[in-house]
Length: 203
Length: 123
Image 1 (tube, helix red, strand yellow):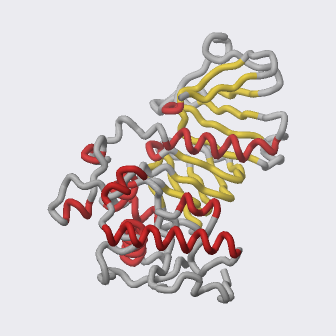
Image 2 (image 1 turned 90 degrees about the vertical axis):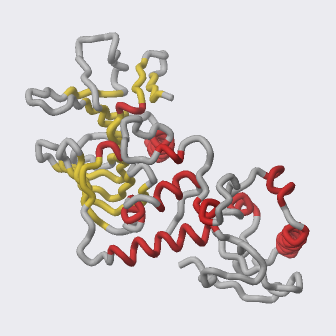
Image 3 (image 1 turned 120 degrees about the vertical axis):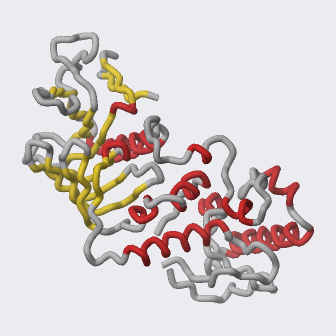
């Protein structure tokens, strides 16, 4: 729940995600001599205050912006990893963590969406309590007989396409199975399994 | 155009204008921040909380200093404006995003035979 930076000796510091305004990967060596992760923080850091920002020698640099006007305090951090190929992963990890910290002060986001999953289609159908997606166990118990048959047919098709090593049109296999429920266009019409085995698939 | 994997985010997006920003993926534009710095680059993602991800960015800080960043992530809280490029058809973009959400939501069809939306291949 916080961003932490430690050097080899274990010396380091942490930043709270909600204070981070933005972060970026900078590879422009004209602007700064090393490729680094740039982080802008909405807080004040004082260079001689060892408690708030202990420096790890040679591994991060801190520039505190003087705010002599009414604007919010800004601090800029540049994290220079010893392995610059780690920058992408660091950037992505931070993006994901930031997404987990939505702005608590945001009044625009409708709080009706918190807690129970709000389901627009169920609401339109007048069935307000039906969730629009199920966990695996729940979902199986809600299947009608027809739904069960469809599921078995689909699983059969997938099993066939994996074993025969053909890519059926529109059906992605292996690690895309995980994304099966996310809007992938699948033509459910084929009544004969293996109908696409001889298809030339052009993606 | 990628739709969020989260039901909550899709619902939030469907009910706010952030859906328009999500339709700007792969477009180059300028984001003005609360502190008056600006970031110009190609939009790679906008989530329901208006967190914006840009690539190939020219960033101008509030002092006016320019620098180039490969990738930038700005928290929604710090976004003041997002410029919509002149050639973007706003209504069409919003409708396309709504259709994408509905394709995800109604994946597999809802009851036998009835197909509310034409089956179009991705892209």
